[in-house]
Length: 429
Image 1 (spheres, one colour):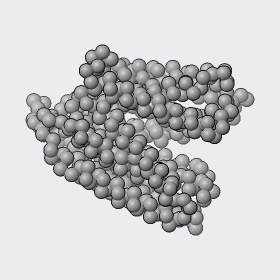
Image 2 (cartoon, rainbow, N blue to C red):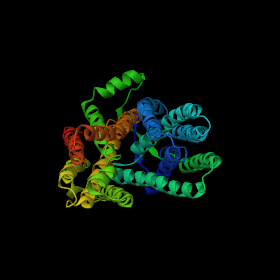
Image 3 (tube, rainbow, N blue to C red):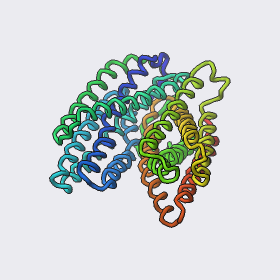
Image 4 (tube, helix red, strand yellow):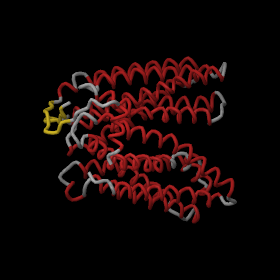
């Protein structure tokens, strides 16, 4: 297969159109991971571990991302895979709503339906999300990659926010049939938006054969082994896993930490979480601006942003470890904002670098590479949420002082970020 490279990549309007696809994915996913989670725990009075395991399961299913990416590489277009993934994802979202409603009558039957629904959600996200990023990688020129990654991720967050607000309004007062109706509407709107966003988009990207030739008659297993033997790809995969493990393991413990050690109220801890997300957003915008403009030569490469972002994350996390011992005099709000800023910096730079490395040897293998890294990220997110909470609970169980337990957990996360910086520095291209 001849390697193809874009001679006229996507413009900003095209990038925004792909962002709407990510918005649709986020809109369907957020209902299953947030709204249904709350209904199981609050309205149905079920143990919180149940939705936690279902959400973790949908992450672990995404180990199939490399296989999905490989399959999408076999054709000229990624659009059919994105649309197919959205359909599977939407059906999974509807199934999850049905399963949740069924739990009110029979918990066992509801769990069985939800299990298959979350399986479909994991498959749908793998198909659509992997193919979307692969399309973005092959159709956006190098100067726009950091900004493109930021735009697409911000539009996903926009999908989270808008869907959550609208669902909240339509669900009050709560009624089981409303949950299923809303899931159906969200799935249909998500598909329509995705279809319109992708309509004729890929066919409008002009491609030309590059001097590099990719002979790709290999099976998936052969392609995977070939990919894994590449030192840079292997190192980057490990980097994605370790850094995202550190990134996600703080999610479930930050608010309890602020409440137990700093006596924050529920409202204050919620505001603290918002402050952290504001920091992440600021970090993303900073890299998008400095990494995709004429200022780039003054602020260094995306690789530099990854390394320094990880080092800053390690420093901010160690600050939390110290803050746990110091207590209330510690400037927790500023510390958490700086942690978010550092996290946003390295994560968006990593996505931009991921898109660059995916096409480093020409086009034709971007799907399987993006799939490998997406799978590593998904597994890290699934493990991170469970391990962060589990380690903090175990540490509190065996340590008399709660503050000491959190100090241990934050120190371990700081070390993970340091190791991530070391891995990023070792990647050559």
